Length: 230
Image (cartoon, rainbow, N blue to C red; front, side, top):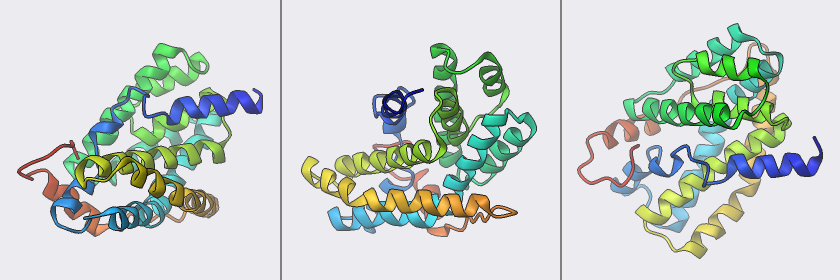
């Protein structure tokens, strides 16, 4: 696959128009707004940056790399182990629902679009529940996207969804949101670099310690007024 073809595939996967329901979730951001932790553009930017560097880079991003590499070799045992491990790290019902629903939607899209070979699609279909990083890594392998580019697209897509949620719930203006996204570019790159370092360790250096996010997500389940599902 040419470099340009890979870029187009990445744009497709990272597009907010991808029909997997990312717009429905805020991953605790709405609860942070309700509690007054996020109240303006500056605090929204800090929320997204800290979640990239202190949450995504510590666990989800390196696990994504491990999943990607096991999709490359189609190691069914390791794929199932890491998919189940990641699922077990989702601390609240809403976080589990999010990764399950978006993972299932993307896995279904991979099958419907006939991305990759039949063996990959069969293996993706038997994982239940299938988590979002598992399905996204599979899609990148199916479309022959290299791992660093694929992970960067995954992280940027996550950040873009967070900013989109902030636009609605803080609320922020469109230009303010674009300023935030632009300033987050270095954080996305730093997240990828840190994930590569952690995934290369033996055993992988993974940390799921994010108690505030877990508490906010759990509080969101009973929040009186909500725009988002998490």
